[in-house]
Every structure is written in structure tokens, then in C-alpha cells.
Image (tube, rainbow, N blue to C red; front, side, top):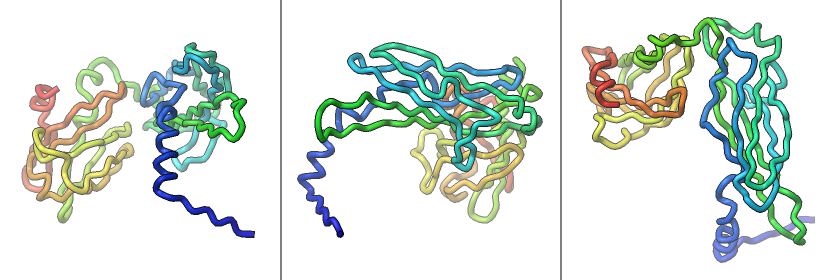
Length: 253
């Protein structure tokens, strides 16, 4: 038997209006990324039930770079917990012994997932929506945890650009992942055409979407730091190579 369901524009509008109250997650997370310090055994995250009337379950887990659920070398504890209305709690990402098998000279990226599970509705034929938060989790071995001087001079300033044909190649010579979220011709300009956010892995290169013509010879890149901040890098190009203008970048912050 084939069920033919026809959705009219009026039905879509009604559905959208009905979902407005569910647009925001009930379970809130205190950060937009997790940096796991390899010298520690665990990292704790704060979660909050922003719904002041209903209790929610919070379910957490880790995925690898390919999106597969994993239970080692990192695990979420507790995997499920109940949060009363308006209450706060903590969720922990714990390192297991297998973490020692990870590369110790560079970061490894994972994804932390947090799903909210609403209480069962007592109303018949009601629609319940469980929202899910997914953020990057970087395991940073103890051997590369930045010291005070390295924190004062961000490693992202070591990025260089190399012209290859009509595009720039972003070169990341560091042992850290770098997430780029914007590219402009100058700080005052809009996002360059064809730019898409990208994450450049340690000791690798990635191609920027905008053309060299669109970015010019003083391109500006915006990245996300450990704390969710969005500093900018101002480059100066000479020939086919561009380097960060450190003084100009620091003055721009």
C-alpha cells in the first residue's frame, strides 16, 4: 500500500508556527568547542536545563572525524543524566588508557555530541522535538600544550598563504587544527565570494575557495581560538607567498 501525503503551503506555514517555541535547545552547553589537555585525565563541561517547567534527559557521546560513535579512547560520563527544570549539572569527557596510542606530536579531532530528550507528552498526537548539539573536541597531547609565551603569540600567526593558480593555499605548519570562518579582501570588506569555512589539519594545507583576485594581496582571515573567540589575521603578500603581519593583526584585536 502506498500512502500519498500532499503538503500544501498552508500546512507548511502552520507547522512552522507550531515549531517556533521549540527553536531553542532546552539543554544548554557552556562552550562551542572542547580542548582536552592531554596532561589531564578528564575535562568537565557545564550543562543547563533552560526549561523552567520540564525536566530533560541529557545524553552525551563522542564521534570520530568520520562521524562514527566511539567508546575509546575518550568516553562521556555519565552517558545519560536527568536535569530538573532550571537546574545545572556537569558532564565529563574521560580519557581511557588507549589515549596513549594517539599521536603525541599533534592534535586529534573528535566531535562531542549532546542530545536533549524531552519528557513523554501526556497529550495525544503531540509532536516532540529533541535537539542535538555537536561541537569539535580537540585532544591536545601534553607535549604540545602551549606555554605562556605561545599563548601570547598565537600559533595561528604561523599560517602562510601560497598562490597556486587562481587560488591561495593555506599552509598550517603547526601541530594544531586551525578553523577558518571568514576570508576578506580587507577588514572593511564583506566575506569574499565562494568562501566556505574550513578546518586545516596539523602540518597540512587546504585551498581557499575565493580567487586570488577576490582576496588581493592583503587578505584577511578570521579563525576560532580555544575560547570561541574570533581573531583576525592580516596577511601581506610578496610574489606567490603571504605571511601574517603580526603587528597589524595584534593591533586589530
